[in-house]
Length: 163
Image (cartoon, rainbow, N blue to C red):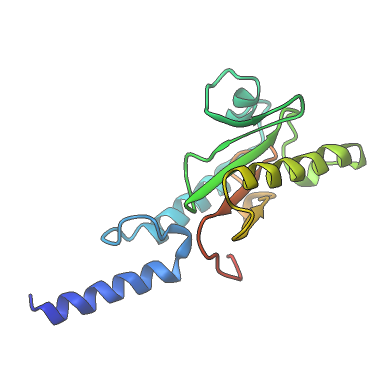
């Protein structure tokens, strides 16, 4: 294959990754973007609210993770399925299935989750360049774990609109 064709193919790969910037940190040789999005959509479409989730087990420390934050109301930890160079989750210890299940009694907890997200983002070096908070609510928003959680993503330029 000629050097020119290899260069053009390389540019096409970069363009494909740029169009799917959520997955820009994965190998250019793998068409991971659409496969990954399809996997997440499938998980979300088949996920059902349950009494206990992996996040509940993490909050109760039944599953060990490297915690970025831990207090009486919530924990924060790195997401194992990174969608940006920096991607962590903030979850309440109270097992709330999703944002739409919250009531006015959750007002202080929700505010606390947002404050913790900003504090941990700053510790992770994200506050100067910016970051995004995402809460998926229900299957059409690709919620696959029914325990309220805030994704905090940063470390690169994020596109708009996101989805």
